[in-house]
Length: 213
Length: 210
Image (cartoon, rainbow over the protein chains, first blue to last red):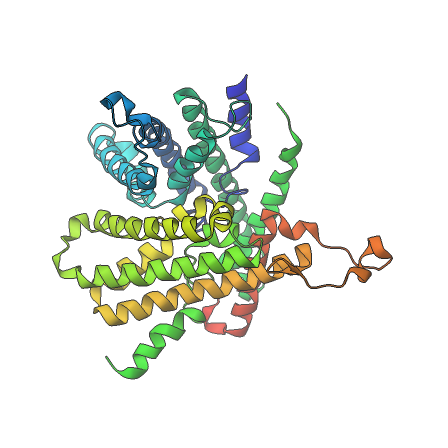
């Protein structure tokens, strides 16, 4: 039940795009057609599902204060959490590279669709952001619906945020496809109207805030 | 490189080549930290420092980086700088660091930093690269400060947490005015940046998209 609540929350209420603004750059650059945005959305879900659990294990087994106590005496007080940025980004870059090679080898058709997006994802803030939010949520009280208590909820959180991002970019692409047929004032064309549409969509998503599960 | 060009490196990103409104880079953090003026300014300074120093370092070692692994080299340099910034913020401005939460860490994946490294630092001498970094950071900062000013002033009636509007004009005290609480919500940041883009492109015609 708790994981269902976390799942729904991370799709709608704590939506990556509309409440945390993560991954906006690629979101605005790629959301011009529905087809490519489905590709990028799928790649984001895929990479999130791998990187967030891996970074969760890193954070809890290696970086946290006292996490290294299994190494023996003298390690109980070691706190490496200041290294988390560099480790997280290294893990993300390495995994993206690995995923790219594996997909190219075993699923060439999928590679053709995702190909150009996969390397971009290494520097997509949504991926790094999910890991950093995960790091914050480990410290929360377990009774909080946002808390991540174990590897299971880390996976649920990654899946939920990924689906939320996917949903946001596909909806946006659909709207932008329609907008290209209408008369937008010249200075607003392109990015300007995209920002305003995105803001209006975010207002719509705010209506999910009252939901309690 | 001529002297005029060097000054253009500093001033171009502020208007004609603004990272946020023209290149559409680094928006994630621009939206999230603009509820209040103070975190916005700290964020703008942090991004400027990181962009300038990363540009300088990458430009110094640009001839020794094999192009196949340049992304990972850039990420290492940038994350090193961001860790420094984060530790400094934690040490001297702990409350602000909490307010900025994950967005300090996200400077690593801020597209402005990576974008300037890829587009400029890899092919230019250290000093122009440093200027370019400072210019891009300033261009980013200008938009951040404009949006944060509007959001804080209309959203809570304060600037830098000091109340600006007199108490007597508020409805509770018999006046006519009340704060627009909606300004504090995330969607308004998006709409405000959209409006900033609108105004800028109405003034500078060559930036308009066809």
